[in-house]
Length: 237
Image (cartoon, rainbow, N blue to C red; front, side, top):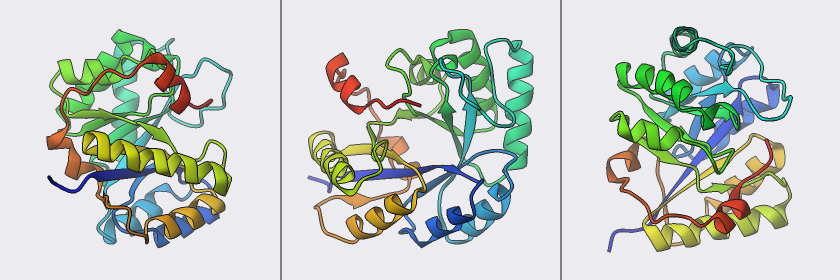
């Protein structure tokens, strides 16, 4: 049996000076960088030089009135405008080899919008990770139908950024990896998260930390997750 693998994607990078501290994480941690942010391009340059996988963390409309930041994709945009904005954002971050959604609980439920997104992702030869900010997301399914390599987030590590909570979530990540062979977590560059991950990832849990690009060829149709399980691992945006 191959060793179970875990993927950790560090989201929301690009705004805060403290984001630089994420570079201390093990090289297997994937960075997902917001477009047109003050530090995004420089941070991606440094992270890429470390040999990390870099993704574009693309802002998408949420069901709440969240501040989405620059370049957000919204449901009021025409398909060609969604395509143009995503292309601009990808051009601003040439290191990106994949895309995942920032927020997006509203937009990822909309098939036409997701088709526009996946068409660009496919044209660029990239992959898509569905952050699963809503259990009704169609993003992963549409990506796969269109031939885009895709997977989903299984665990939010730190929507309660306390050590006690992150220990529970990390244990669930490891358990899922042992169950299915692969488990994907999303985390954020809070100081307490960086400290927790540097400690947790230095210990032996009989799992291997790998960059996201390493598991994409192995992704198969997964066992369906119940809505109860989905509710447990979903998090407010």
